[in-house]
Image (cartoon, rainbow, N blue to C red; front, side, top):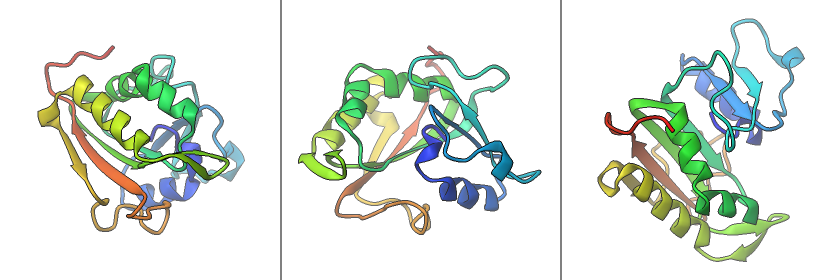
Length: 169
């Protein structure tokens, strides 16, 4: 999970589904003392700027959830940092699930309409190919609805497949 500090409840939700979970974020909210043996794990790491942390291999599945994205996130999307991070984190043939706000916010106040959705969709299609990106009006049933701010009027959901031929950057 890239950007896992946004909600540790998401980690618990994924982990309870029986999946191995590793959250990577600049400043994880969950500290090691809060983690029980066999529970989700977190690593502090700048996933936008660097390769995966030492000892972490690309995954079959990556999740990325953007609650109240800022202009900084929009800039990272426009500069290719978000798609590069997803590409590095996914194995060839892997899948990414991305829940994002359609708009850009400052202090939870909307400052643009639809810009996040437009730029993210464009960047994903350019990086992974239009045929490998599916945009949905809402997340699939059960996708963290109790754990994520998943207001269907404000969010968009993307499913991205990394083709076997795209090499890690």
